[in-house]
Picture (cartoon, rainbow, N blue to C red):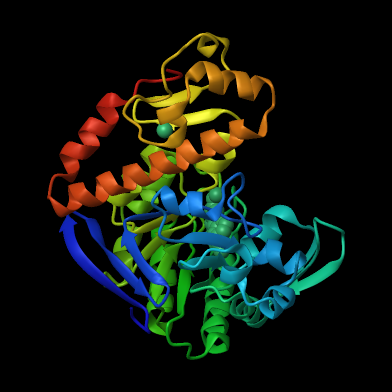
Length: 373
Ligand SMILES: CNc1nc2cc3c(=O)[nH]c(N)nc3c(CCc3ccccc3)c2[nH]1
Ligand SMILES: [Zn+2]
């Protein structure tokens, strides 16, 4: 068990890397997929079940938790790990992204952002300093700098101004974070789809110095082609001995493409959110279990999958409980999707370690039929 935060690279295959992030609360195998536990829970999952899928770390949200039950209350109750019964590492976002996408009535200044809670309309304020304090009260192991992610489409001038504000906020985040052994602070690169702006952002972050670096400002509607276009160069602008975290990504083929381009960590609500709507992700593509053609199908979702949903239930049963609106439906599909995502990550880690990533990626695409299976 280590008392400090460090990243060990074990192998590379092209631009792809595999390694381990060491934290006092445990190891994170990379490339890693991090399930999102927004309000202190991965929806429809017990923490033990999330751990059983193979997740080494999960995400919490400063924005949601500061509104309800508040960071001060969670601190008084022993911190977020104790509160939500998840003893392994937790990464929390800094809140700015969620303010812009969720809250009402906002005012953005150099100082920070004031906004109305989407829960009860009450007024709140976030700044680099306040975000660092909230994430410290929550006790998260990996803290994200407070940034601004511009809504797309945005013209280059707006993207440049927003990125430069985020870089000034990154410096204030670093200063406010202070020296916290065993806890990490990650900077977030912005700059839209403009290489020069991405380079300027990476330079500034590297100069300030962070324990890890996120590629922000993507997965906001730009589409996979534009996202991969940025990922063809942006990760390479970041220090290669530190973890690189692509925020908000994504579908299985987004994840494979991001890992090929040098990304080490990813998060997405997709496997849990789509699981609750009956959308299953499998090695052969997507299954919409609510489709009538599954009504009499005795086969499992995926005969190769070892998750509880695939081991113990038929497509017919899953179809039935979704149609009947039974709670077990979201539980089983979420478990399956998170299990599938973790199996995909294990496959990527093994392939990179064995120097056979291109063969793995070719097989990944060959197996995936288009549309519903
Ligand atoms: C879905 N697409 C998506 N693009 C993102 C861009 C950014 C960005 O540029 N800056 C920050 N700070 N966060 C972003 C997020 C939220 C990721 C998250 C959610 C929940 C918990 C912990 C972390 C994004 N999510
Ligand atoms: Zn399964």
